[in-house]
Amino acid sequence: MIQAKKTDLRREAGQRTRDGLQAAALELLAQRGQEGVTLREITDRAGANVAAVSYHFGSLKALCDSAIEHALERYLDAQILALDSLGSTSTLQEVAAAFARPMVRALAAGGQDLAVMRTVARVGIDPPQGWERLAGKFDQSRREALRVLTANLPGVDEQELIFRTRCAAGLLNWLALAPIGAELAAMSAEQIERQLVPVVAGAFRGDAAVGR
Image (tube, rainbow, N blue to C red; front, side):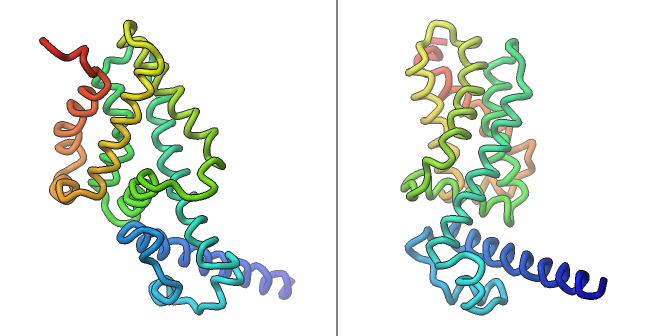
């Protein structure tokens, strides 16, 4: 009984160390990207020793890859959940609000949530090796977006809608890293949504908005 308890405590301590290293890596990746992160900075921030990285991840690269994959999964899961809640009668504004919701919430919350979005934004510009591991979730997010966009824009073919969706995603990624993102972060989630949703909806509409 005592031995089992000690084993559980060691396992919990190991998981805390692993989580701490991943969180520290995520924060630094969000600030500087993978090329600007050192092993010593991560371990100092996490309050861990260098050997812990080898033990839990194998290498600095494997740790960064794990943090990046974690960030992408959190982002995609949140976006899929928001889009999945929409019905076929949802308006373009509602689609844009759901698509932008993870970014809106991250900007308003700051901290780890915003670090996730900044990491997603950086790797969106320069995708890491292993990106294809999440291809299924990227496809699911795209399918959910297309499902509701097609109902709102019936005259636009699928490839054009995919292009507009990618442009909207690029816009959100840019906001996470650009100075204007810091301005938005000073607002409430409701204020950010009021500013951002019409812009994302415009990206979805494309030339359909011309002349209106």
